[in-house]
Length: 325
Image (cartoon, rainbow, N blue to C red; front, side, top):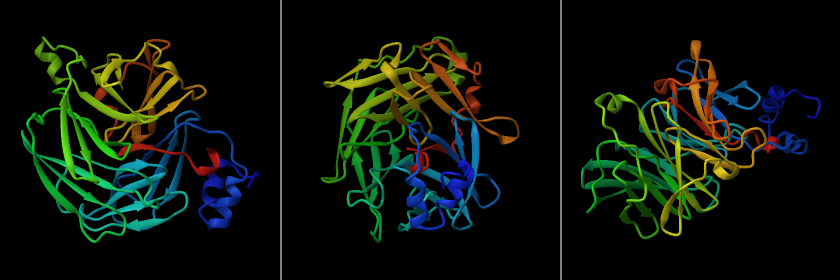
């Protein structure tokens, strides 16, 4: 294994568990996330290392996979072409775990931990109306999804909202109206809280209303991190500290954010990537690329991005192969 090139090592590690363990035994230090995407045609999955700028391709276990819905702990939540069939897939160990069909629409989806753990819970959130949301839950081994509608006293607006994220066994979603929704799957209760200490840019010109605006919610060591982007301006990052949202310093304190529409990740003190935000992007001929914003240099690399090309909906981030951690 130590003599193999990285691409061959990834392929060799999927042969069986013994080969995977052999690959882990010669692993190197690697802490950053990889960009993962499924091509429109074919039966494969693409992985992109943003630091080395290298692309790898792995075969999927079956045909008819449409997209990746979420990623966490090295596992992918995927959908088949029917759009109601979900399953978990680990692209490195080749494990596949089936789930019951879910025919209900949703605006956001997430799972709490690896599906091999006893605490894994899946949650979907759908906006029925301004003051009614539907939340569905499921777990590996279940035979059906359980759905409950909640009447909210704070509006869940039709405009921008963040992805779902699980922190300390609870699921969160933040809206552009400054409302944080918190769902506890154990008690099946939903709470809401309005915040006035998160300042989104004021838009005075109608032209600004056409610029893409996105909210990203993520976790860092048990704390919620919120990021807001608009146009080609600097991403604004907040941390929830002692029941108060505080804007992070101009250097991000060594944090690296890997942002995507469905799930975002954070890492600390990543060599060569500290104090930056990374966005997945497709270039010419759908080549996998990344755009980053450096808080040290106060600029985007490789240049000002076209917001419409950032964070394509069929892409997100995944842990690198286990023998690279």
